[in-house]
Amino acid sequence: MGLNLLEKTELWINNISLDNVNLTQMAETAARVLGFDSANVLVVDVRPRHITLDILERDIVEEKIMGKETVLLQELSKLEGVNITNETYIHSNGILGMICLDVENPKEVIDKIKTMTGEMKEKISKRAIVFPTGFELKQNLIEDTNTPYLKNLLEEEGYNVTPGDIIEDDIDDMVYKLSDAVSRAFGLIITTGGVGAEDKDISVESVLRIDPDAATPYIVKFQQGTGRHVKDGVKIAVGQVGPAYIISLPGPNDEVRVAAKVLTDCLKNHCSKAEIAQQIANALAKKLSQKKFHH
Image (cartoon, rainbow, N blue to C red; front, side, top):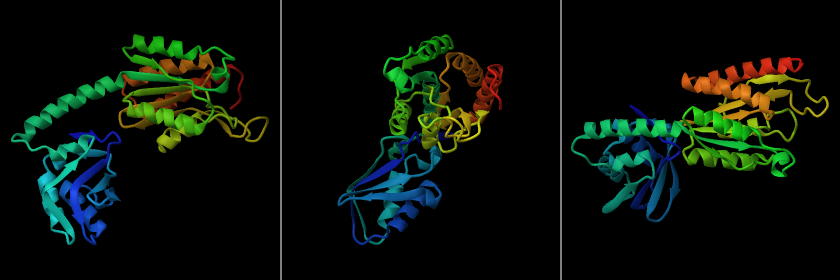
């Protein structure tokens, strides 16, 4: 079974003292004990009484780390300049805390974790948040018809839906709010608006900052630089961080309705982010062609 670290990637080794220690050797030792690639373990912070390791792997096999605290400290103590005492201990805020578990029956614990993880993923997958975007909404120039529609549709599909704050046309603000939604364990994060070809449209770019491998297919292409088009087309975005999907949809309500129906079908069928993005893009391209857009 594999567990996703859900961005909780740091290990603190407390009450440890160092004297001219080779940090690369420390990281390599920790990687060897925990069964990670040596390139995926870094020492990122050193203080007088503790160090912090960052684990770059996002998915781990729990059997490799469970109960490894003692052996990890023993191996580190063999390095020149590393002083481990009875007061030294390891701490983590996330899944990596399993390193500290000392149990008589690891299989029983692992089976219980499997059950708990499945239940947690199911709960997260049904928690949705919808963010409308744009100054026109922020300044009450137009009514937000998308959030109520998406809330009703998703609730009919069994989701617990939270209306999010209106996000202005600011990439830093959007990245912050989307990242915060991921950390708050929302499994479905949707933005509406801001996917166009103007300079103020930053929804797709925001998703790419959070997930550089997000799927971003075109729904319509333009001649770049004509009129207000600083970009060469309109895209949508589907990113994923751990169990959370981040979906950027257009702003027009009729397009949101088309995309939302495709999205819910894809989620039921457990489609990948690339499949979700392409199916939504295909449906929206068809919708736009009916509006006389030329591709």
